[in-house]
Image (tube, rainbow, N blue to C red):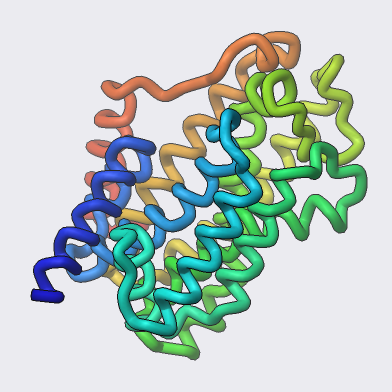
Length: 280
């Protein structure tokens, strides 16, 4: 039965989320059960593409990514894929009418990671972040508003800014790996060979501005099915940013800042109390 295969596909995307990101998995569990599966499906797709360009160093990454893209479009036209990650993503794309320009912008940024190692202008930087993060936020927003186009337009910019903030925190957290191992430098006009306190603070201020707008104009206005889960992800990344802010710039390149599992549970409990008291 096709339904059984689809259920297996959804389970695969959920497993990918749980294995690759405990924090995103925890936040997704806080969403309404009605929309969790579709968020897992989106994450599975973007995670696989990201892993191709970031991890599969012993293989022809370009060919793998191009095949992944071809398989997606061929399967979308057929309505089925034997790749369970693609099969589940296609279901969500069709169900919520996720536009192809979002998928194409995402894949464009993934392709850039195959050859581009430095972003020297703000325009290049913003274009990369739009494709690698903002559009993922917009895909999720399509699920959250469940076809309400007016709500989608209202929350579009905050969703993009939240995606940007998450991505920039990831960049700052992963500086050691990106700069030393992958030879990538995303933030323009910042010398990561000798990261100064001023340079780090410039990045943090930019992220804080993204978070502020996303919270005030977006998270507080989300449908109830999505609000707590997105708020949980926001609190996690805000905590991560605070730890990065408290880490001397000379140390950021020497370590990878993390949030411990007990701290994640603490954040969850405190966030839940605020949610139940209607403080968000």
